[in-house]
Every structure is written in structure tokens, then in C-alpha cells.
Image (cartoon, rainbow, N blue to C red; front, side):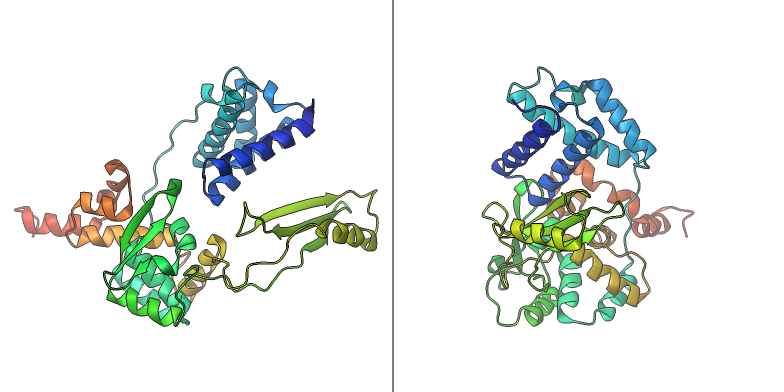
Length: 350
């Protein structure tokens, strides 16, 4: 039986396969496996199946000292709970140590949103059809980031102005859009009738080899398989002693790449969440608005609906929230409606 680091690596690999089997999204799988790999690195040569709740607390304390805030710590703890649930189901651990640990709730931050004037400025600053369609669609539908990156042309119904999207927890829902978004979408899509709506324009890759400060060589590439049709980031480290020169490292890298599919599916690559965020921030910079994100536009969508008299339960359905409490945060954000109601309804408000 494997032990120590080798066992941890194998368990992480099997955990990732199990998440795929359970139909977790690509982003969620990567987030959970990243947490597990970080915990394994913290745990050193010991097998993770020997970890107890004190070890989990020490890990969270370590991450806290590295600057992680409470929401980040809760995310890491949740990932470890899912992983140890997996180990428990496989009979490798008798009890789930992370479930004996809790991270306190911090103060909830109110979501950031744009004013209607700022949204108009943002649209004017869009310099190409893709960015214009992106802004119109996010603001016009309130889509989540994961719904945008997986959105397909075949799922757009221009006649009834609705789109079928799949996002959080692989849930499918319909979002509505108006004439401005329809016009921007038609201009951007042109004659395209299938594939992802927002495409990645990156050229085909060849892998990347670079030297790290300690003298070793770090290889990075994106591999395309049936399990990962959009590609999965892979890395490999060639130690200092085994590859003292660039030529040796390159030879090993080419040998490694012979059995790896590096070719991206032409015309089918969806725009990544990172590229989408960079596009929005660049447009925001041109408009003089700092750090514009898809989430901020989603918050603006909900806040402006509330400002114009939409019922909170209708907004809940439009946002795809399962719980009303999640939507109710916008009642604290929408100051415009509060002030307007106060001035018109209170005897001393005007």
C-alpha cells in the first residue's frame, strides 16, 4: 500500500475523479482539489488519513497567518469536509475530522453595484461587439460568471428573448433579456448558430517551460481529454539535479508531451472566467470605473430592479436564488428606493 505523499497524491486524484462523477462543475472541482493539495503540502510526509481535528485547526491557523480572511478559511474548511466525506465513504477514515471544526461568521459585506449612469458609461466605453454584448448580457440577465462561460448559442431563443443556462451546482434555468441585449448579441454572433457564445481567442499552445528561482525547471501546459474537453491545467517540476541545463529540461519536457493532447478545439473554446473579468475591468478602466466585475453587474441588475419597484420574490426567481434570504441583501443595498419611499411617505420626509 502507498504511504505518505504518494498516498496523498493518489487520494487527491481519485477525489477529483469522484467529483467529476458527481457532476461538479470544473471550477468547483479545481477549487476543492486545490484546497486538498494545499492541505497535503502543509501535512508534509504524513498520510492525510491520519489527520484529526487538531490538524485541521492548525492548518486553518497557518492559512490565517498567511493572510487568508474568514470567507476564504470557510471555503477551505468546506473543501476539506467534502474530501474527508469522500475518505469516510471509502472506509479510509472512521470520522470526518473537519466537521468537528468551525470558522465563525464574519461581518457580511454589502455587495458593490453600479449606478444606472455608470452602466451607461460602461456601455459607451465598450470598443468591440464582444465586450458590448458581454456587458449587455450580464446586466440584462443577471447571469452568474459560470453561466456566462458555459452559455451556448443553441440555447438562445431570440423570439421569446430567453436563454437556457447551466451554472451553480449544475442547475439549469432560463434567464430573460431585453431588446438592447438582443441587438448586441446579434451583432457579436453574426452568422454563428452553435458553440459557446463567448469564445476564447487564444492561439494553440505548445506548453511552457521556465526556470524557477531555486534552479529547477517548472513546466506548465493545458491538457485536453474526454473528461476535460475545455482543458485542464497541468504542471510538472524537474528537480535541480536531474535537469541542470535548459537543454536537458527541454528534452524531458518534449518526451513528456508526446503522450499529451495539447491541441485546443478550434472555435469551441469558451472564454475563461479570468479572461472575462479582464475584459470587463479593461472596459471599466476606459469608462473611469474601478474594478468592474460580472458579479458587480449582477448586483446592479438586482438593485435596479428593486429600485424600479420589482417584487423581491420575482427578483429571487430572476437571479436563480434558492433561498429568499440570499436575495434580501439587496433590500439593504437599494438606498435609492429607501430614500424615495421615506420622502414620499413620511409626514416629515419632504
